[in-house]
Image (cartoon, rainbow, N blue to C red; front, side):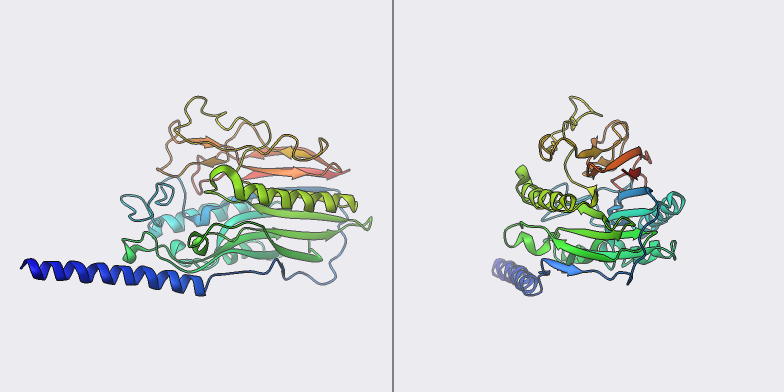
Length: 360
């Protein structure tokens, strides 16, 4: 009996080790490695924008899987076992979150909508085509997709292969009332070490160029910087890339706006503003106050949190909240009004922020 038990244990260990090796080899072979610059489909011969005032909306919709009732196993350290935390929410919640996102966007209907963590075809969201669902609400809008997560099979939690995260296709979706005459996916520098990099996002920017009547361009950048970045090493590389990019565009006389989920706080914003002395072990770095010349503008609503930590389900007054979703404007743009929407994180672990601006 002991010999048989030992044999079963050995073979179980061998099979598990083989599974891990196969997953690593397969993941390495099919690892998504995008080019530094990928052109996105745009409208040929886009007409110059005649208006001078525009509305914007940014929102990380959390792949419609991280609403108030959801927690996230990876945030809780569930590399081996998910425990009681969700690898993905029940399908009824995924549908609820998607419908909530669609309802809000349809009512908001900004000129430009910059969305992050939009699933195109992922197991975690029951293979919803979230981009297509949103696009169907705005048939007259122009749209682009910039893929930043393309994983054939994510095997974590490793000890629960029947409950694996699985296939993921997700990215940055941009919708606009106007047609850009050029748009590109720009790969951001820096990556995690192997094998982590196989399963993490390939961070990028989605840059859109809209022609103006004065022969200049309105440059709109959809942003989503790295998370799970201890010490901010990757974010520092990405931000240097972004700084060089926006300064170069502004020097050409263009109008530049970047917005989205920065995974860091704006300059000089205390990360625990909403929960002073109750950080629960969380921390969030700030963009340096002198990161850009002083006439560049960081625009956010300081009265409403845009992000909640999702180690547990959302509980008002207990779950840690902060601001990591905001805008960057070049000196030739004027912010007229900014408003973040307090939804009690009903549909996502982020909340949308609307901005109205004017070309100077």
